Image (cartoon, rainbow, N blue to C red; front, side, top):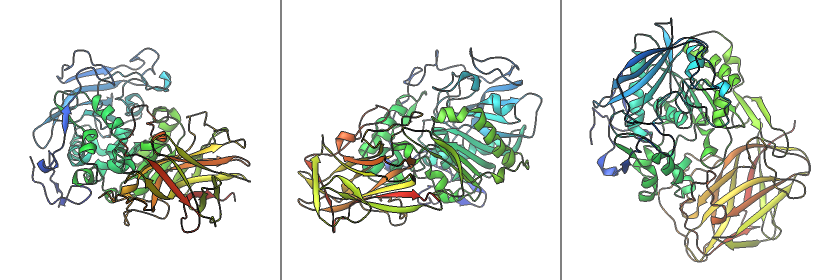
Length: 583
């Protein structure tokens, strides 16, 4: 293990502070036996870079006002200085390369916005799917800030190829201590540039959003504000590859296969197969959110699966000055929507430029209410997340009738289904308009018939009064989901809340024949309106619902035999819903 002056590692973050001198590892501990695989060649599942490796010599050009990067894209509103392939040396001597965009005629005192990811800094880029070309200049890395907008509003945009990406030296790392430490060093390097004001922000979606939690948790002195879009998690095990304790490496393997570089890339998809329980490696993938105290503007959807944790960073960060906006479109469309760019500009202007523009009067939370079959409501102002007026109500499962009851069920019954092909459903109708906004959870009393374990998948969906599934016409959303492995049902008492069970995932507690146990299942948050007469249905299944929403392949389940769900009397199986009073 190569270490540059590492201090005692802090649990959950892997870092320590010694006065103003941060000292970080540049490799993982050898004992973790982290798996790396060859990075993709010039052409990957994401993109193709002809002639890679490219020329990586530094050069500076001027992008002229009115010029167009690609046909149909937004013309540049101003002249931009484009510094390409600027080298920066990391603590272990590895060199990474970055592109810097600056407004012409503003040689100094510029705040900077960094887009941190291994996705490549090569430009111009076509707009992401769904983004109108007129919204996008092409001078942005994938899912990153558009230089045309930000430079022409007085900012520098800095796009590094992180460690191991494309021509940058070293191996590509997935968040955790090495990548976050690189980000810390890079923030401070940017702040020292002769054009810099010393104020630095982070911005971008998906990987670029997730990375912000890890970097900010190290508290770089010049990191001033965060703007994570669709930051799917800050805990990679609980929010992605180990969601519910069920190994799921399809998406991670897909991303890994698309990362281009000259050397190796870390493979969390292989690691979750090798190490399926929480351990020091996975703890390294948990950002220490209590350390994040700078201003935050976070935006994301309610989502499903991995994307069901987009709101968690906002909730967990210790920042006093933080804002959340929930949207109902794709992250790319929301990211480059001119209305949202102007909104974020006010946030960055306030904190990176010190402009007194009234940003602090912006509602702390702006939620969306999805209305499958109807019209969504957007930007509803609220003071907190979860909403302060939430009433958590339990609706009890009745296996005999396949219904949900607002009162405890006074007759015991059970329902079973084939673990591979079957499912069980429970439904309730609403006799008045009902808002369900916030966190859901499901408690099941269960038995494994023919196996010592069970993997559950859960969907909560909206039906019309005739029992037909309703789908949101904007994003295809029908409702939130959850999943859980029965042998990993032990809760973490420090992380769990009344409305959200969080599991420790430390060891398997397998089921004995005939044993009936309670299992608490964490369900993604939602915001849904149920009109009078509409119904809510919860579906519980094994492999029948084991469907990756991106079509990349199922999670690695352990389903054999039958699942039996017990309800009524002492078996108080229930669905807990966050109800918002109409008044």
